[in-house]
Length: 168
Image (tube, rainbow, N blue to C red; front, side):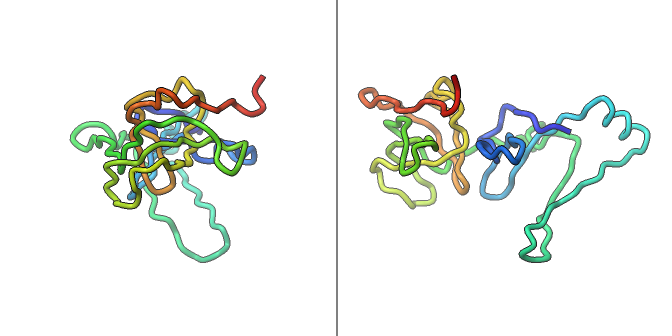
C-alpha cells in the first residue's frame, strides 16, 4: 500500500525525513486522515482472503494504543463530508526562514484565531506543506501540529525568500 495525495489534505507528515515515506494527510484537532492506494497484488490478496492487517508501532514509552480505524469509504463523502474549518487566517503573508535556514516557514498576521492564542502581529507558522511557491495562494489551507490556517492576502511588498534546498 502506498499513501497518496488527496483534495482535502492539509499537510504532509515525515516530509524532509528520508528514513520515512511522506504521508499526505488531513489533520485537525480530533483526527488525522490519510488515503492509501493498493497494488494489484494487494487487491488480489484482499479479494482472496477478505481481510486487511493493521500494524501500529509503539515508541517503547508506554503500552498504549492509539485509537485507529480502517475504512473503505472516504470520510469526506456523503452526509459525513467535512469542510475544513481553519482555526485562524494569515493576512499579509510571505514565505521565508526562521531560525533554521533549511526549514521554510510562512510569516503572516494571524487574525480571527478561534483559539485566541495570537495577536495580529507578524507570526512564523511552521508547516510541512511548503513544497513549491506555486502551491501558495489566497484561500489555501495549511496545517501545523495543532492548527489549520487559511491564507488571506499575500503581502504585496514583501519578497518571498524561499528556495527548495537540494533541488537543481
